[in-house]
Length: 538
Ligand SMILES: Nc1nc2c(c(=O)[nH]1)N[C@H]1C(S)=C(S)[C@@H](COP(=O)(O)O)O[C@H]1N2
Ligand SMILES: [Mo]
Image 1 (cartoon, rainbow, N blue to C red):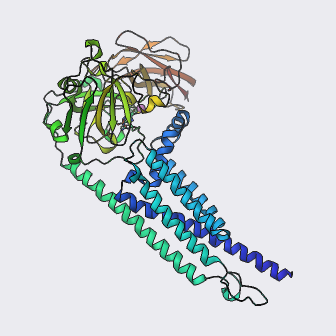
Image 2: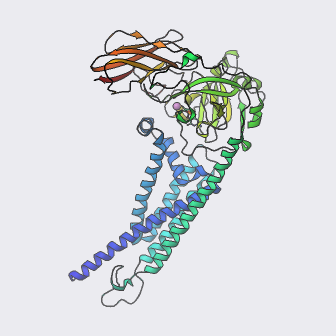
């Protein structure tokens, strides 16, 4: 073979490969665009990327989940979705290359991806059944058909070849393959799937918009039992300390929802049923708004919070006392002979959280919360209704977007996180945190304010002590206590001397029990140990 022929053959193969890869990408893009549109008709959560992402979250080992939350914080879900899109793009490229040679196999590969998406969507805890497979299936069918068609255009047109053989795509005249057909099909597909995707987005947006409007129209009635004002001495004026009340916009968010549920309250209700329930209830949002409401300051903390971590916040909640509602349904706590010791709360996105019935009914202010810091719950924090139970970590008490409460036993049912290795019961551990100075700060010598917060919800905080290096423990100045369900600020002026110093804090709770020095991991029932901060005084 002459050099010239060999070069043109290679160029032809290269060109076909590149166009094949492009076809693959286009097929993937089209599949996602169509799926987006179909999911708008089915359910936004059934879209392939959200479904695969959700299924991945369900199956991620706890250690990796904790790592992701720690490394990416609130962006963890964005990173996950970008990761999925990246992987999909790579596979689409590969399938396109494959299709350029074996177009049936390449197209079948697209269908395989549709099957994965469909499986993920139907296996999610909030799946409504086979219907959830539709976005992935329809998207994949269209994507596969497109790839099959585009790959067909890449093949040499059957013709009586002259002595030089069919011309490659870059050969003179380019008549060896259907360039025009390819371009037309590719541009049409790109435009149509962009249109489908945008239309799908717009339809999702319209649903969300209805929920946003409905929330805007809500006016919370004044509580029949208001919280007493936060005592003036509860908030210290130290720069860098966490504010006593956490603004909603700064309140930490931990959940498994890739898309924040946007519930329209008029099509929402809450059901209470199960063992020992003599009168099952179904309540509308308006029913709840008409009940006597109480207002309470409560600190919420996450079991995934590392020592010194950010997943803690205090808000003024307004809601319906849960114990009273349960009593209306005939529920008795186990200590009075009730058969159910676990309350399983289920959210509109299929999350389940198990709470001890005894804790909810022992007189503490367990709430079905409707309001947070003077406004209806923000969507990210559970609109229209969520639970809040003082003294328990969020994963065993604070169900957002709640729609079902079932009375059962701990023996009979394990909730979502319990199935994944977390403890069935998880009262909050006593913790204290140094907010200022920040780790690795370089303050000037002289008086430096060490300050932070300490919490032991429902037991309260009675003492906070601070130690510099291996020196003696010194009592910090405690801010006034709001209630024993809230955290407490503290501060201590320190005469800082040049050099590196380790600052350590520990607290004692309202039962007189000191915070343990023993370091444990967050799994299975919350991190323990003292928080230390290393600073270099200049
Ligand atoms: N529906 C639902 N509710 C949920 C969760 C969730 O993933 N889904 N996460 C729980 C956890 S682990 C915590 S710590 C709190 C966090 O509440 P926040 O995001 O309002 O701070 O919500 C709880 N309620
Ligand atoms: Mo949590």
